Length: 240
Image 1 (cartoon, one colour):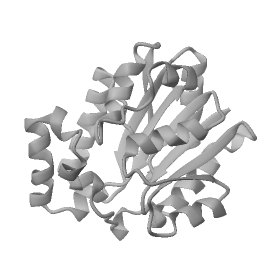
Image 2: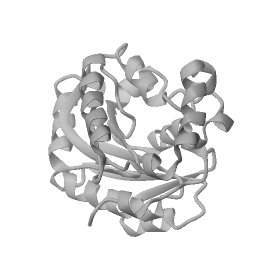
Image 3: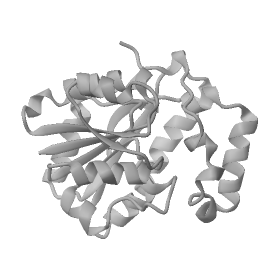
Image 4: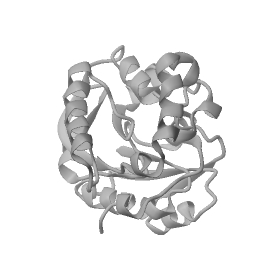
């Protein structure tokens, strides 16, 4: 069974489209798939929308994506795990590819990630370069990360000391359990942070992280870009 874990905090505008995309992408699996939404202290209708679409909802109040993902994995029944962010759209080719990768012996892996349009040219170039670099260096983007349960448990899951970069850390740890595959198949995710935060806000978030990544990644109070109040932008919502 494939267990799909979606951490979510105040994701009512997007969670429905994400779950609809997952349903379409995994229909070929029949009853060999389950979807778990980990509702992390939401103040909107995230949980109700998820239940209405048939997802199992796990309630937590930790406001930390690593801990939320671990809670979803603990509740999951599958021997294969897929972690999907609430603003990311799956598709059938990428699900088939990741299942095949694990069947071939991959401990886990990631995929190519693109942002919903419209996007300025410089960001489209950044996106394309990032995809190449992530593949070269074996970086697993957290918005769509898969692994076997055996490998996940062997490395201790996501590091709950980290408020960001927990996805990269898990990808590195998984290499102790087996090969990590970065697939060429693509998923689409929201660029809302680029549009809804000012340049000054982005700099205040990024500069401390660049200067002291180890310390900053462990201090939620310095990570408003990730843990401040949820900001949505209509142009960034998935179509459909």
